[in-house]
Length: 116
Image (cartoon, rainbow, N blue to C red):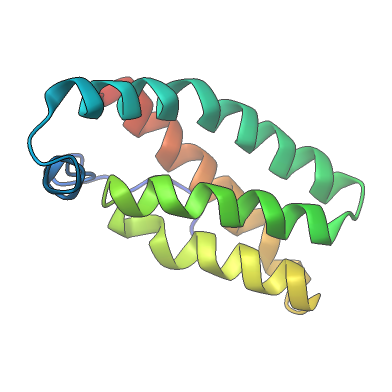
């Protein structure tokens, strides 16, 4: 499984859904971007920490929390990955896939943060 972020940077994310949701209020959009940039690194750290301790329920909870911001920023390349992390960890199946999924989500989110 490829754990690298997508090579295509253009279109990696979109603010259109966020702008639509905010009804064009740019201060809201700016706040949500700031929250993403501040909270996502913490969430990624928690994902890795909980995974390393075999705390799969907590992995699932963190992935669930991350899902909303990934969806709002339309980071389509990892939308399925974050859901897989959430579901696999919750159901404790396909656990061997979690490291690659977590690495891909991490790399992609880190790239998006640098682009925002």
